[in-house]
Image (cartoon, rainbow, N blue to C red; front, side, top):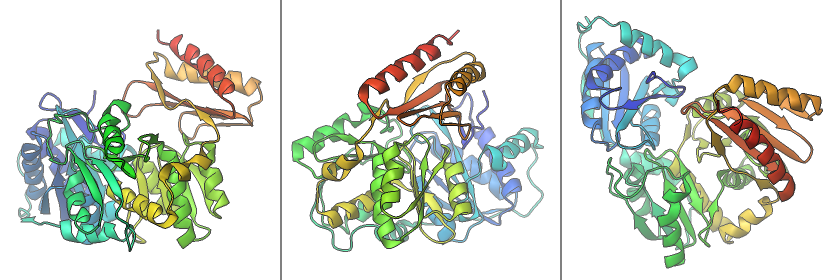
Length: 450
């Protein structure tokens, strides 16, 4: 299986991704990006320093100057690319994957993602065909830079100007979220229960993947134990955040998208907001009720960012906990810490508990994301589509997998871009309808496992 995925480079170290491959990818990225200066950062995995050195060596051999940020979150790298007017950036990380994995997230100027359809395939082909001899250009220089202070100022604008002394439980999962978070907390009068702030690429406490319910147990317990107003858990590289209300109940990220969109629309009336196609119907309804324009988009950070740039959207959110902000006219980025700051502002302004803000959005019954391994994905999708065309579904779309909508329920079947599974999301106006349609679709998926 190739280490060049839809959104990034990722593989097991060293069997799939070794320093030699990192060196080649550095040289290939230099050729594809065509940049004079590229920013490099890394996470705390044991393999990251060696892979970073090999990557930087490859970049420099092609005449590229490198700004080395050291240990940072992915959003800090995005900020640095824009702040330094660099021609691109590469983050050494495997995000929320287990410790044996590592990889690269690559972007162009203005932190524009390089994905499978926008240069990553080309980088893979060039890296595989490279002559092993070094480049003929004068070698680039390496500059080490600490950008934590300006990054905190960059994110601080989303936090409340006058922040109340809220009680907050924060789980960094031993990932990179704490690097920018610690100096931000020094600027805010919060009472904080800190969980796993020390970056540790072995992830000794739990996986740094807050989408898995088992990884939220500690922050939920901390919220209840300390009677906190809010809980938040970050993923391994800090670009995602999942929130927990004051009762210790996880809040679905489409609800957070709706709430943050409403807050931003008060400042930018009539703005366009994007939401991923797995989101509840209540998300679009809340955006429109606030005077905004709601538009559905496909899943994946490279697709969301491209659509935000093309459409001029002011904000976007995904069910995965990615929240996208238009920081400047040219910088659109997902940032878990920025989402945390914005939620603090939401609570400070509303002066209501998070559960009360979310309650009006809980009008429908959803399955959450259900995954099944399916042998013949195209065949199953074709059969399901034919069935619903015959039933005169109100809408059938191939924006991302198969999306089918009826007046009182909808579902999406989407092949994963990162795993060999088919993902089902379904929502209905009543619980019996949700259960019946869920079970019928799951039976079809399980019957196609082969």
